Amino acid sequence: MNKIAISLLISLAILGLFPVMTPAEMTADYDSVRLMLTAPDNQRFDQWDRDSLVVVLIDIVTNDPEDAMYHDRVVSSALKVLGSMNVPEAIPLLIDNLDTYTTTCLFWLGTYADPDAVSAIVGYLGDDDPSVRYEAAAALGTIPLVEPAPGVEVEIDEELASQIELAVEALNARLEVETDTAVVEALTVALEHLS
Image 1 (cartoon, rainbow, N blue to C red):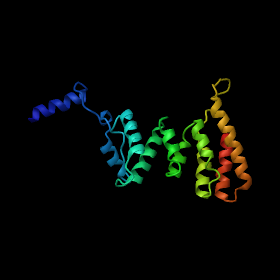
Image 2 (image 1 turned 60 degrees about the horizontal axis):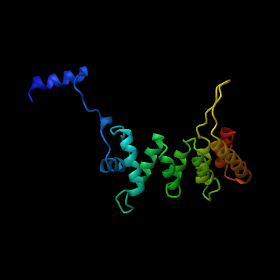
Image 3 (image 1 turned 90 degrees about the horizontal axis):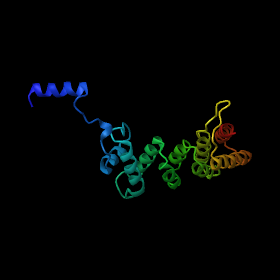
Image 4 (image 1 turned 120 degrees about the vertical axis):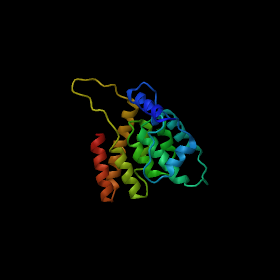
């Protein structure tokens, strides 16, 4: 291409008359996303369209071979990305991987106002490891709850409300026996948040 043609294309792109493929329009593929997940930092997932990225991330979490290079880093990162995208498809994957990637999954489950997420988190309040109990309490302290404006009626998810009641009971029960001061503090914050 000569300089005039390049200048014309640039001018047309600037004016919006010539479509230019933006990074967000790229369809995610397994190999490219997996490679990005191996990077310890500088991960950029906004280059792929959201829907195809979700599909590929789910595929990676469920099908990445255990003997593949960087398997744990890749799956853990995929769970983090899915959790940060706040897509409902992430909830069952986060729950299914709680025993393997406990702190990652607890953290991201705490970003969902979902009955299954709350129930799964509560199951870790009595873990033998105080750091896991802390993460579970901290996750319950971040469940997004909608506070209705005065005079505004909000439809209540009965199943979520029921799970939150059970969580409050579990937090109170754990506070009676907890000896780790950091966990007691996290339990107290979670109790205040959910009450």
